[in-house]
Each structure stands twice: as C-alpha cells, then as structure tokens.
Amino acid sequence: MVMENIEHVENVTEITEEMKGWIDKAFHKAQNAYDNGEVPVGCLMVYDKQIVGQGRNEVNETKNATRHAEMVAIDQVEEWCQKNGKESSKVFEDTILYVTVEPCIMCAGALRLLNIPLVVYGCKNERFGGCGSVLNIAGDDIPNYGSPFKCLAGYQAENAVEMLKTFYKQENPNAPRSKVRKKE
Amino acid sequence: MESDAHNSSFTWNAIPVLSLEEEMELLEDKLRDGPPLVVFFAATILDKRQTSHLSQILSATKPLPESLRHLKRVRSCFNRLDILLCPAKDHDRVDVVKGDENPELSKQMCRSNGEAVIDSENVAQRADLVQAPSLAEIFKDLADLNGLGDPFLVSVPSKAPKSQKDQQSWARYWPCIYHSKQKNVDTEEHITGGIMSETEKARIGTYMLKAVKAAQRSQVKGCCGAGTVIVDPGNGQVLAVASERTNETGNPLLHACMVAIDLVAKRQGGGAYLGVTGEDIDESDVGGEPLIGMVDQTLSCQTSAESVKPHLTSKKRKSAEESKKTEEKASYLCTGYDVFVTQEPCVMCSMALLHSRVSRVYYGCSRPGGALGTSYRLHCKNDLNHRFVVYRGVMEEECQNC
Ligand SMILES: [Zn+2]
Ligand SMILES: [Zn+2]
Image (tube, rainbow over the protein chains, first blue to last red):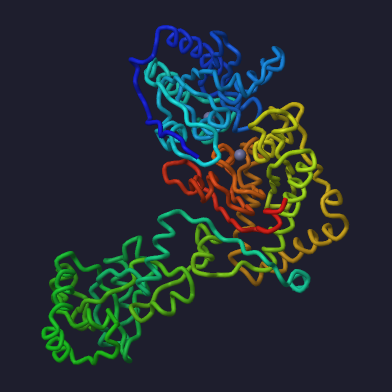
C-alpha cells in the first residue's frame, strides 16, 4: 500500500478567508458545548460549500466518552447523505472538517477511515492530539487504515485555548471534576 | 480445583503486550543475566549482639533511598553479618571500576581484606576488595557506631526482584525483599515468565467465547468484523456483547468496540447510536447449558483460588472497589472493566477504550494497523493520561476463524 507521508502542518497562511468563516462558525458550536457543561469543542463538516454536519462534545450528555464533536458531526453527515440520496463514502472524500481543537487520536482514526482529505483546526490538543501533538495518526503510514489527511492549524488558536482554560477552571456540574479534566 | 480438570488443556496462551521500554528491560535482564547494580558502603558487624541496635540507628539516620527499599539492611555472609551503610558517592564508584581494571590491585586488596574470592563472577565480592573510606569519614556526625568493622564497597541490586526466582539468584549480590503485590500484577507475573492459572484462563476463555460467537453472528449478516464483550470483573457481570455493524448500518465507524462502549452508556441511561442494539447478553444464547455451567464453575473456582493466589485476591478486590467507585462517581465510563475482543482494536477503537478508561483488554489475533501492539501501543503510551493492561493471543485460533 503506497501512501504519501503527510507532515504535521501548522500553517495559518494557507487558511483562506472562506475557511476562516467556517472556523468562526465552529466556535459557536464550542460555545454551545460550554453552555451545556461539555468540554468546549465544536466542529463543522463542509461539503460543496454547505454545512452537512456539525457537532459539539456530547460526552456527559450521552454518558459515552467517545462522543466528541467530530463523531457527532460525522453521524450527521451520514444522515444528510441518506436524506439527500448521496453516497456517504463519496461525500466524506470531499468534505473538509473545521474544528476548534486538534482532533484526538480516536477522531483522527475515524477521519482516516472516512478518507476526509483536510482538517482545519484552531489549537493543539496536547493531551490526546492525533494530528501531531501526541501521535500523528493524520500522517502516519498505517496499513489498511484509510488515507492520511492534511491539517491546517493555528487560526483562532488563542481563542480555543482560552475557552478550554475557562472551562476547566469552573466546576462541571455533570461530571466529577477529576474525570472531566481527562476528557479532550 | 475441579474446573482445572474440566479445562485442563488450553491451546492458547494469553501474552502480555508490553511497552517498548518494558520489552527492552526484559531483554536487558536476559542478556545481563543478573540485576542492574548500584554501589553501596557496607560494614561487617563485629559484635553480633549489636545487630538490631545498629540497624535501628542506621535506619533512622541513613534510611535507604525510596527506590532501594527492596534491599535488606543486613546480610549473612561467610558466617558474618554485614550491614548496609549508605549509597556510595560517584567518585567511589569510579574506584570500583579502577579496581576491576587492575587485577594486581584487586589481589592486593584481597590479601589485605583477608577474604577469599569464591566466585569470580560475583561482583559483590570484587567490590569488597576496593578501598573505602573509614566509618568516621562516612558518618562524621555519628559517634555511636561501635561494633562495626571498616566500611567496604559492595554492589547491590538497584531494582526490586520481580519474581522469587530473581530474588533467589540476586541474593548472591545482596538479599532483597520480594513483593508479589505490585501495581501491574498480571503483567509483572508474565514478564518474569509466570504462568496464568487455568482458572484465570477459563474465565477469560468464557468471555472470549461470547465475543467469538458475536463475531460469527455478524458474519452471517454479511459483516467481516470483530466481536466485543465488556465485563465488570468485580462481579463477573457481562455488560455488553457487540459485533461490528458497519455493513448493516452503512456507518463505517460502527466497529464492535464502539458499539460495545455505547451499549454500556445505554445501560446507564445514555447512549448515542439510537437504532443500534447489542447481541443478547443471555448466557443460553451464547453457549447453551454447558457454558452456563462453565461460567458458574469459573466464578466459584475464583473464590476457592483466592487463598492459593494471594495477588489474584487483591486484584479482584481492587476491581470490585473500582467498580463500586465507578457506580458512585462516573458511571458513564468503563472504569475498571475488562474488554474481550476477537481482533486487535484499530486506532479509533483503542483510543475509544482509553477514553472510556477500561482496565484490561484481551484480544485474539493481532492485525496490521492494530493499535494495541502492532502499529501502536496506545495502552502504555507515557504521555496519555490512562494506561491499561493488554493481553493478546486469547483463543487466537477461534478468533482467526470467525
Ligand atoms: Zn476526539
Ligand atoms: Zn476499530
């Protein structure tokens, strides 16, 4: 299996004005997560210039530690495809993910399985980052595991970090404090 | 134990998947054929009646460093008693090397020391031969050390023995204390070549069989995926039985582990995959009457085995405690749970299990791209916030063929 090794890119200059607009929208979702006592991460999936899926962290709500914003949005894209009579595997191959925080190792794995070509994110995820921070699932050569994807990072990074910091400073009413810190 | 006769021959072996560091350490241990060593000052107790008095003084004034608490303070050697004083400083260590490199010096020292070198390989004996400072130099502040001979240097094991075998063979350097109850009991046991009890194998096999059957059923539906079972080891309760649902649902992310984690969430009143159900947990559905018998036997046997295997007892109790804590505090996570999966989980599933904070994962066969041993070892990555124990090779043949 031949796969090109994609380096972990952090290049704000490659982020277009249009992309910036989408990222700004993703922050609304992150704020929504924050308001609901979830870790403030939000994302959009954009296909053919329209939002086909969006999500925010729903870990506490679903009592399922895997319900990160990306996973929620992916499920929405599936639904959108069913409604619109599109083949989801084709749609994912042409969909860009905009997310406020670097996808974790799990989500990066999911994005590979779906052959998402590009991820634009705000700040790094030092705890669980799967696009270069802890591991480079985005770019590594992993047999039988979809295709590597490119990342553009750094736009609105301070904003994303600030939201996370503020969130972790306050008590989360829905989960014990010690556990909350460990998620995303 | 009755069930041992019942399950006397297992064709598989549960092999611990270690971190790279652990594996290297294991290899080094094998190559070195002895413990890693550190140099200490020791002295012979001239008046044996002073032994307890002297060890009290030394324990109070020169306690052993935290990392060296496995060392016994006093050893019995050639009909005499030696007591550890304190770790030698760096420059003293250099002296030991010099002494090793200079056989003439060693011989001289040997004569002046008056002790015969019995085992040329015995580093401890060679270290004896090197000159050491006087007691007054080491203990400038202690006058009450009457009854001690002149200090000498000795090489002692710098880490705790991991098995009784190690403890016995390392005693030629310095006697050590062996604690069988360590953090990663099951891994430690296997690192040192311990064998998993038939009882434990029977327990693991029972649950893995459920995972195999789940995988087989998903195959009937046209899937090629794995089967996953999540168990609370505290009470033996099966919490989720899942198979891969990608083909059936058209969602390529519905791997068996993802489904199983969501089933646990559903039990707690949560869950995200609305239409996706698990396999029946009911024992009769999985293996029929004999399996129920086997489960019961396994569980009852566990209790009887506890007296035989003390470390197993502590492990089980800990799990029970953990799961109780889980219920009280964070019931939506899989804290303390065991996971049985037919194939090595992929990156996504492995990280999902880590996010869910499972305790142990047992899987059947490794596969390319697997993240618990093959392409990555997520379960023992230092910079991730949770670690868990992983075994591979459980019912490998059955898992391969399902
Ligand atoms: Zn994630
Ligand atoms: Zn998977």
